[in-house]
Length: 93
Image (cartoon, rainbow, N blue to C red):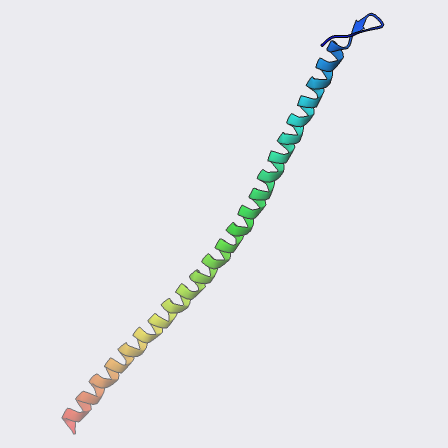
């Protein structure tokens, strides 16, 4: 809908205004999407940090269990040696 104003049409102004509005909306949408992606990235980083802490705790527990198992094995070997010595002594006595 073009109207004459001082010999110029307002249709061209309307088109330029619409283009500016559309460009502004696109920038706003891009900013909003970027903001959402940034928030998702921060959330993922926090979750990854929690996963790493859980993995470290699990590794610490595994090492403790391994050390405990080695200690139990050493004690069992020591008890076996003692039992063998006691058996040898009981044969002598």
